[in-house]
Amino acid sequence: MREHHVSQDPYELLGVDRDADADTIKKAYRKLARQLHPDVNPDPESQERFKQVTAAYEVLTDPQKRAAYDRGGDPFGGGFGGQGAGFSFTDIMDAFFGGNAGGAGGGRGPRPRMRRGQDALIRIEVDLAEAAFGVSRELKVDTAVRCTTCGGEGAAPGSHPVPCETCRGAGEVAHVQRSFLGEIRTLRPCAACRGFGTVIPDPCRECAGDGRVRSRRTLTVKIPAGVDNGTRVQLSEQGEVGPGGGPAGDLYVEIHVAQHEIFERHGNDLHCTVTVPMTAAALGTTIELPTLEADLGPNEDVERYFDLQIPAGTQSGHQVVLRGRGVPGLRGGRGDLAVTVAVETPSRLDPRQEELLRELAAIRGEERPTGDVRPTHKSMFGRLRDAFSAH
Image (cartoon, rainbow, N blue to C red; front, side, top):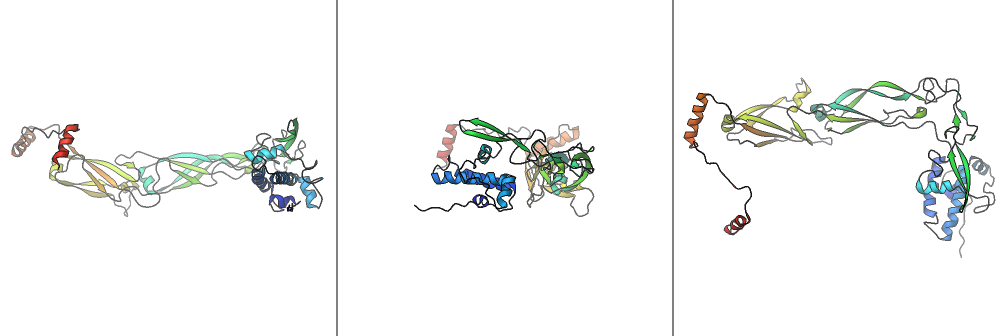
């Protein structure tokens, strides 16, 4: 049987560089543990390698053992799989569930005081023309900003955080239990320092040790052309500054488009209704219709009105589609404008108007119109009759 050479270098076993940080080592171990765990690969060779990478992981995550190995010592204390090569049940659970089996907030070393801030969301209302063609707005936002007194450190000027005496800077403490699986060691956040590994003996009075304070500031947001209801504009790193003066999250500006008095928006298309008198619909006419650009204010470069031709004999409900007069798209192009014509019948006539209409009706033979009555739905027999008559 051919023997496989097994490296005793924990860095080689985990596939990481010698200067790898804790996060890199943890990710490498998780990846290997998922591949080699006995529940996934029950063959003896995989089980043996699983023990090896687990022991290597414990060495590289223990500062004392890692330092001893880097100085040329043997941190395994008898090799892989021996009495000195135990591993943490927490590490196995972390590898498979992506969390910390020892409790929320823990996980191989102190957690940093400086963390990324939360994203923030504000809503603004814009006019339809502003949404269509874009606009710049000044916004006043109230968010957490880095404390200028302590520079985000949280300690009063002249002082600094000190290592926690309870966990000796580790940020977590070990709890050992005995079970049918053997001795199980779990790690939990240190209660004295809340998992940070350090305590602040003299907190900053301005921010109470949080490293940030609330402040109102003014921002300018550029709203691109073509936004619609619910569109969110992202402003990177303009949200809440994180605890400990950490990097800010993002600010999202959600757009609400106000209702227009003439145009109704459907996607990138605009719709409107034009009401014309009965006589104008019969004879034909030209109507001056405002453009959406007219809402942008005085500007010599935009067309504020255009002439809409209503041909003679136009019926109520007739629609005229004007290409390229809708809303610009976020990715280019522009929608259409659909104009629906509504023919208005006069409800009040003076004697002379009534006389003229009756005269017109007589000329057209419409004094007693019977109307063009058609069935809404044909019967089955009617459809069959039409089908046979078509042949």
